[in-house]
Image (cartoon, rainbow, N blue to C red; front, side, top):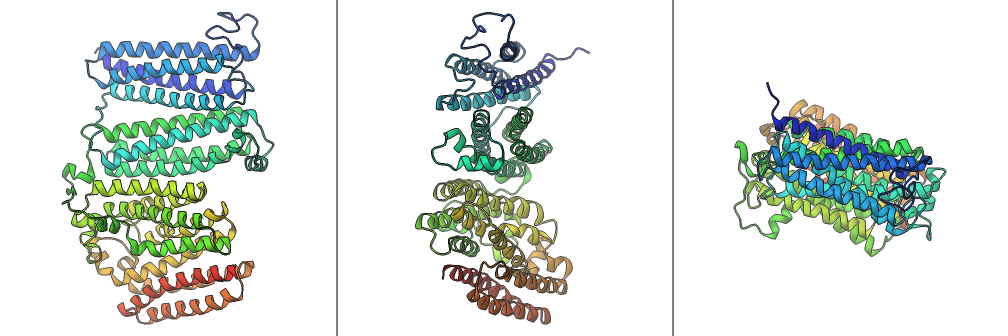
Length: 608
């Protein structure tokens, strides 16, 4: 049986993509080895010759790169011509092949400019750094166009860009974030080449030294950018796979998460080994793979016919919104009462770190940015949990349940809040604080809401760690780092959370049982719950005393913590003896006061 032309073209398109990845990696090898000036300032000739005679090693490397790039150009040109013949007018594969040819032309022009303007070898000009970033972005665009061409040639459906709401925004932000990460990586790699260091400590010291070259000072930002972007990309991948469900989408999201974990590990190894050439190439290969996975995930999610869950397509309940939403409805999406305690620990985390007033700018950044990030997480939670919220008395009047705010608008609102919150924290404090806030958001949405909440009674123990991030945000906003004391604040809230939340779960266990959420009282019963609460209360009390042994706090805090812990243990014991709604309510309300007063006592003790 004769193989269809489109099938042969699809195989060729995937082959062209692979070849261009290899050529791009070889280009990185040329840069990393300092061989970019191997052909002098001549282009397209090499040292004035079509084929150099008796070349040096650098000349041979550079000439080989030009030859392989020329073959890549011809392969893309052939792909374009073949697509024109194989597919009818208007087919997306023809559009993809045309884009690929366009970016191949610009790729050649950018490469030529590096040579003709002398932006190679030991050149340390800002222009070289800018062009290096442009080169990286163009390569990403070229590979994306080739991947989409291969996708469409393999019978992938055309894209539907309109009406995608938050999914389209999430994917767009993910693509921008990966481009930004790639550009920061290009600058970092250039800095590693031109300003090598003996060890990581020296790199950090030089990065923070005023007067150093900008390539040196920018180097320290790349790891934090990588973590921030990685967190967001993995988050966006799983959220998109949830809202545009398909077996392929889930596999791509999972592969993206695993691969990004490998990439972060590779980045650590790269830093530890002082960026050897082979490690730089592997690091870049992983970056290309992550980019292509995200592009294919976007193509899968945005294709025509993909089910849009938040709009009720494919048999799901429609959540289009009834209209008439006011600012109060959008404020309700953020769960202000829930956020109040989180925000308190973040702000007092800043006060504790500063041993007094941290400054108005930092304080406002933590307040506004922290509220926005937590509010975004809560809004997404309301969309994901709207089915069970509708059947619980405590949550039946939420805007996503009453449909005063549609799921689509709630998600758009959440993403807008998250972007603004991240920007506020980065601009008003630092990138570490913004990254930690993003980490808390992702932990709450992915780990707790999407994965654990409906699967296991351990949901609040593990997923509740999201509520322990705010003091880290406040601390990092002031100091730019995380000390042992900062992690102590994290641990305190981590072990306090089960005491607080399981007391609430006892109060509304009938609601959880009705909707099938496996909270501890539902799964193991009241007796097991009150025992667990008592144990966690004891752990919380012990952890609250640790800073005293570290010499971080004094007598004022000692007196306050002893009193507060005594009341916490007494109320937990009362609940153990009489597991009734009255004692559960008493412990639940006191647990909030306990945490607030404990943080206030720390702040006052450190300030006096």
